[in-house]
Length: 305
Image 1 (cartoon, rainbow, N blue to C red):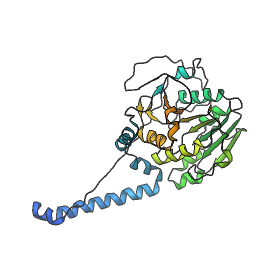
Image 2: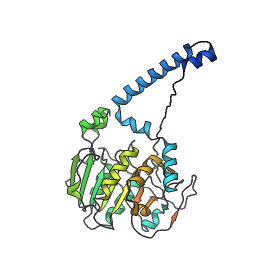
Image 3: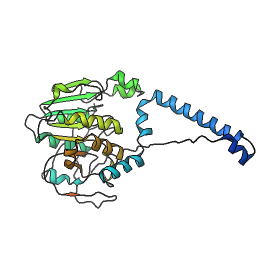
Image 4: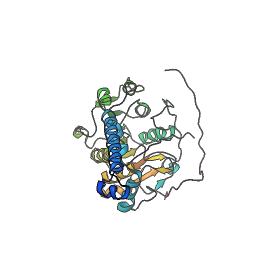
């Protein structure tokens, strides 16, 4: 079994201004206070400069894992995240071949992609929506099964405007650029008008902006697009690992999900994915470290692109 692990960090800096007179009383001078404030201002200016050139870092600074977990626990009572469905309860005869797969940073795990393929097979003439495509691994995997695919992602210029390096932009659609059954929407999902796709989507994969607000907005939009009660939504990076919850993403999912549908939210075992799916499922609570309950078989081959 191959696991994809994403390491994220979040930093919160709080500076409380102090009264220089009180510092003078303690230290005999106001110089210490003045020096501290000067250092903080320089640090603030540096941070602002970095973020202005790399806007994609802002979500990491805002979404404190502790604050997000506290929000989820206080509002939803989920200290260990969503209830977990065993992957073999979803797909008893689970067997998929993942192709393509890059084994490079920033993509989904092999198992995450295999799950998307398995879900797509559930629908006759599946219509698939993907928010966040980048290299196109997930899109190419599902496009080999689905009849119609819609890819929503930032344009190459928007990526550059957000501070991503040119190499990121050059990777866009690497594996999916020649797929005939893909409609490409190069626009921010947060501001795009999805009305043309309303009530037409069987399977949706949300893997775009992973900040709290980004996930919340995408979640709200996608629920309006689902065809019927059999439709499925999958969120990537619900977990930092298959056994550790990424609470900023979970908070965005819960707050963006209609209240009456939250009871149908789950984590899929052994993956980084959360899922919205209707049905009666046996569930468990995942607390690290888990004892393995199943064995996966992986066969690997490679060829040059």
